[in-house]
Image (cartoon, rainbow, N blue to C red; front, side, top):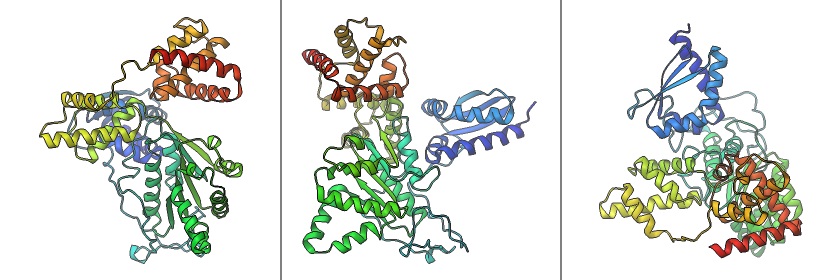
Length: 479
């Protein structure tokens, strides 16, 4: 029989290991979880509410249970209790800014991590933080865009982990890091969070955050003022971390691309971190020089997809917490179900509801949310649904409606299934996990692969293009 002390020790080791995987996300969720004991393989946990319990169970318990089983040799069973007032949360609630931790004096410089001083030699920071060199503030950063305020889910997990690693938090650092995704999905949030973390950890690091549009404007102004030497020094020599938003804006601007190419090379050769964002994958960037596209793929390309329902609920809850909006779980769920396109629209809807409720002196309850969202949403009663697209695809390929949801991998059925997945992703605001569930509970990676495959075939195979155009005409007639 294992004692409570043995269980507590195994638990401490297991949560330490789990937290290392994603500290910000761990603290966010486990600040609402309490450990009540581990005896004879029964793990007793207390959650602040049902939503927290479900999230922790889905995304953290598999790792925790495996670790605990390895430590205790017992099969782990979890016993949950819901309690709104926790006395001993597992983790402290994360704050927007962590205090700067001064580095101890070291006789030997640390290994090269891509953040060097102006002379090229790492600066040694004294125990007194006032002795440390502090770089000027980074222009254009939003103080609310931190890792602590970023909600992690399957749709953005890779981009989040890669950004944390680029900031030096842990994990393999990829250079360059190319973050791509649609409008309002969190690309800029991650870039700002990365800059905040680097500035906290390395106050002397010289960080340049800029949009591609502003880079173009600065380049043109420098040419006109004959100050190209200063422009090049800023981006090639006086920069330890370069963050460029919306790199696709450089498309077609040959001379600016040439300048960025040389800045990229200078920083990369000096092991300085480069992070760029785009609304397209590198290979989809039109009118971009091939050598730049090639360099964007040297490191890691991390995409962000539309958030799935669970992540959207968590985003609404997090925004409500930050803005001090009292919101019931049922209202969180309703907003997340109604707004599916992107994070920006999701948060905007919540702020709009809260503002109007405040003006009217009305609580943001479910009735109020339904009325206001219905009044501001453009109704499209004839918009095609997932089921409509599946039905039209089946009719086109002369298949049964159940074939697309089956496990049948026959070539003709698999191709029709891929086409249906592609059309759903193109025409609807569904996330990959949601589409996976709609096509027979398939993994979201299967949907991603299908969409990319059909997308490539559409550009290279006339027969596939003809199929898609015929199906799209049929869909147009029902909308």
